[in-house]
Length: 171
Image 1 (cartoon, one colour):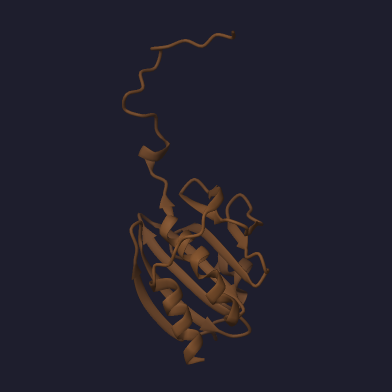
Image 2 (image 1 turned 60 degrees about the vertical axis):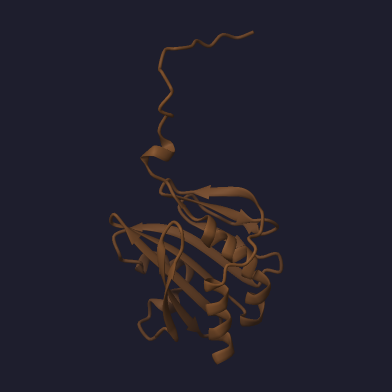
């Protein structure tokens, strides 16, 4: 069990080589890239990527406020039952956000990362077989390091854009 906790700690603190991505998910609040080779099973509001060997599920979402119960009901209901206590809790400062990581060990190893900004809680949850985490480390680190908040400047027109300065015509 100690080895599993150390593995997850190393997984989420060590900055490994990020896997290349071939698509991006957004819910309008954040952007996250799907690791190359992973299956995309996302919905409109929940990023869900499955490792090539189907041993690891990675979820990313945002929730207004701090109540995660509805989200956890979908992806990790055992954490909502109140009996699950984290084996370990760590702060993980990354470029976009500082995450709080809680590690749980049950049937699966679960790493729940949360970060709050401006009344929105961002969540990354990774679950799967303990022995599969090592192979997935680069892809998971890539998701965490590439997690980007979408703000008004990201979605707005560039400063140099002048409405009406050009016209469109079919050629």
